[in-house]
Length: 317
Image 1 (cartoon, rainbow, N blue to C red):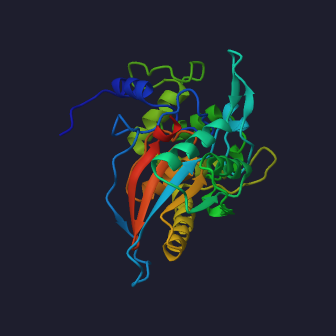
Image 2 (cartoon, rainbow, N blue to C red):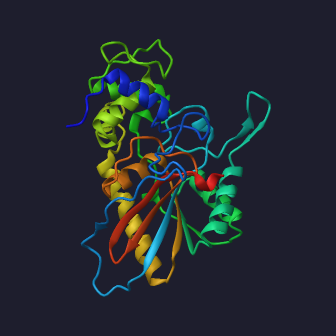
């Protein structure tokens, strides 16, 4: 039996160890990777997942997918929900007067991947500006001029009526729908009270993710996001089942093409929660946010997917 830990203690530990799993979380501030190996920022590998639709007789080749979250965008910086709406990578000025240029980080990551692992053999991105820009700067860092194939199946979650809303609004609605109580007047990371409730919205969000899982939060989001807007319009939204289905269809297609072309390393740029849902469908649970331009490595061999790491930020350094 696992030792008992109070909800207050769990919430405090989560607040110290992890950032918000926010659809618009930025690369700076509290947006950590999940780290099983502290020295690398990588999560431990999951069991292999066998996909029955893989054709027999395929060559015994291993393809490594560098599944990468896009760079920090204007909407990330504004803490706005960003799914099927789009914005470019941010260029601005920090409080201390330093330059904030989100184009620099993917160049650094691309440079380090090339130096440590070798060249990419193919490149794909979701069909939005933030994904294509990130892929372009990653390849610039890797000193490569590959064609970037656009794939709508790699998009972020569709958040329905929450598109463009404040992260605070959406996540507060979700966790309260799941039975948690948020202190609306407290700072985002305020701790829970003696009852294990009434924490800041990020505190309660992290608690809900760890207790119920991302899939449960995305199911609640879809239910809420498909209610009519103030103008009476109903917008479609997605849960993790919807997202992982299209993500894995795209990733299967990409991997099989790589096998046919004898490609070993493939760059794929997507979004944080879509990556989380896809990885979750392969048997690896993710409970913290995937940082901007963090890499999750997936291996594909003869129809078998293996999650090697999730949210690895070591290439950013």
